[in-house]
Image (cartoon, rainbow, N blue to C red):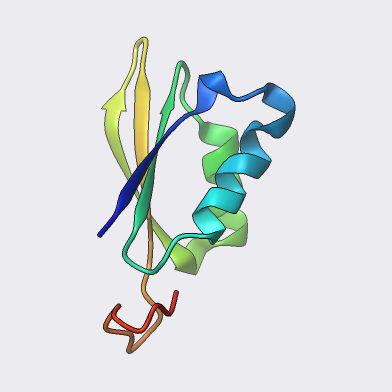
Length: 87
């Protein structure tokens, strides 16, 4: 498993969500991104829940009050061992 850290507050607000979504889409199954932010990323998490519910697992690593860290792990495709590169 590979884990990528994204410090969301360092990305311009106009590009933040699209950058994180694209980063997630480029993950291999079993890999994860950790979103580090200065507030709870609820709107982004709602997007994932509404549009990618079967594709990820979410875990809060830290929940404020000054820093939030949320791990989004991309699920492996059903029956995939993870070695073929299949997402």
